Image (cartoon, rainbow, N blue to C red; front, side, top):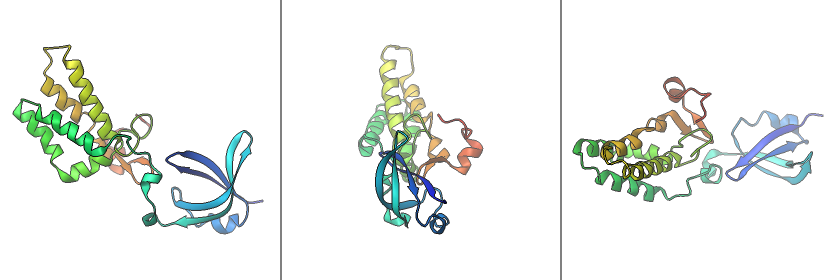
Length: 194
């Protein structure tokens, strides 16, 4: 008997789904990562939960709020941007301050930066993850610098800010975190899942 086996997921997790009725008819109507609406019953099968689907229909992307499907930083995006602007304002070296502000004042860059993940898997792999990662690292660098008076705090701050800045173009979020074509060609190798 033909059936469909799907991996269903949203930002809370994933579950296996099985459709037994009309599997042949429905199998060609979906692509990987399409949004679907299902009705079914959850049951335990070989120690794992799965959904025995009764109905399955494709949902147009425009009718979907990605925030329901992709994890987002728990921290407020605008608050994190303000933290970076405060760190930039504290930089006494005018050239380094201008460099950091050139990024922070670039609207098209910031639109990508606020949304970018820091990685495909493992850490900060969600909307706003790169921003969160950099805010945390800038704060950590500034804390560590207090213990080492000879360290150039301005250079350390800007270095922490810029260290992963290319991730805004290396990684993209459509329906999941993926390497962009550009990222795969000129960035981290696709098998490196940092």
